[in-house]
Amino acid sequence: MSPRHLHLLVLVLFAPRLAWADAQSIQLYERGDYEAAAESFTRVLADPRRSSQELGEARVYLAASLHALGRTEEAREQLEVLARDYPEQRVDAVLFPPELVALAEAIRQRVDAEREYARKEAERERLAREEVLRRPPPPAPPPPAYLRPEVLGLYEALGRQVTLGVGLSYHQGLLEGSARVLLNGDPTSSPPRVIPPTFQFQGGVLLGRGAFRPHLGLQAILPLGAQGYGGGAVAGLRFSLPKGFVAFVDVGVERFFFTADETYRKLALTTQAGLGFDLRLPSGK
Image 1: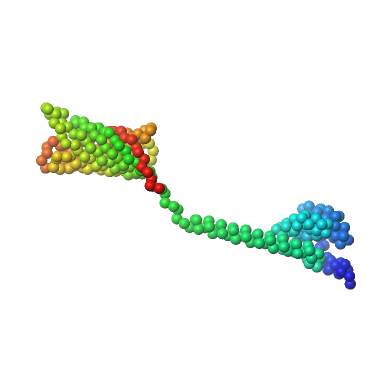
Image 2: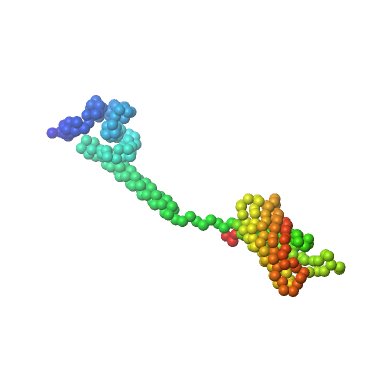
């Protein structure tokens, strides 16, 4: 039996599987009319009614027809599509030339390698995303810190006394602390009597986050030259002004504990108001 007769016999044996195909298209290929066969199988591939298996088989025949015409690059393109879109479809070594089978297998191996690489990359990216999700979020950076030189005036309501002073405040986030020096004097005496300055230390919290922030705090008072100390509570406001300036007002109740000096009242109601300038401190990074 000649190879051609054997080929036709194999085709007959596979006829049930190829019953979908246009018989004339296959006959054109078998007769060696590859140009007409290529055109016929191109029309089959354009038919939306064909099943996936039918389209895969037609693409094999189209690649074989193009390869026989010496249009190797076009045949390679068809085999590339075959390997990507129809991974189960093989180029039968009994029905088609060995060169075409070898080319199809080489392309399939490359496509399979690319597909496996893409799968591993996708898996690697998935694991990386899961690892990122498992990690705790990075800590939020600390809020900026500021140092604020201040000038202020203090009015003591019970004694109707006005005192000037200077101070230095530090604030970061919700916390604020300050140290102030009040320049005391007694204008009612004749001649006016100079009283040693009073140191005031204050700490508290700033509420809110806008330009207008209430303030609640405690203070300790240390008058120089007096054998005692004082303390109290304050409530106030902070106003952010343009160019980094800050205005502040504090209202406080102070209780003094002295053993000898009667210059200071046992109880004082004070109002402090002043102006400062915020200097942002380096973050240290």
